[in-house]
Image 1 (cartoon, rainbow, N blue to C red):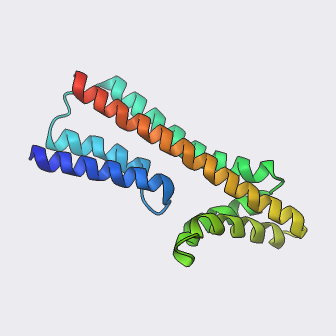
Image 2 (cartoon, rainbow, N blue to C red):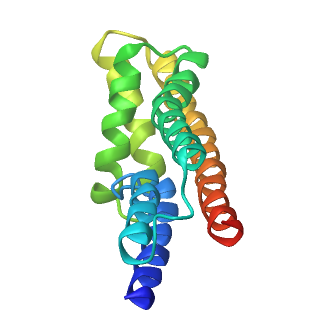
Length: 161
């Protein structure tokens, strides 16, 4: 059972890290689920209140900041709520509609279309689209860093407890 547990934990960590780049994957939730898989298959003994508090705090920060950083990018470049919503839709649809480059083109087009739908001029819409790409990259970098922190904390807790 221990080998199966480790395989599942590593698989969930891999899915989680891939989810930082591909938003259709569960990302940080997969990493968080790996802790429960470890506990169920191997042992919950290494994990105490501090472990769960830190991991849950990181998870909450990831969820809140993922949206906030993306929205910040759009708003910093003059976008409105419409372009934030459009870029969010673009992040979800883009990778399916344009497999190779949809992750970048989707949010850009979504923000541009969102701005144009509310009557913004084309230049402002393109700026908001650029902001969505900046926000996407900043958000992705932050997710990768925080998810690595989650995994490193897990390894530290398992080794030293």
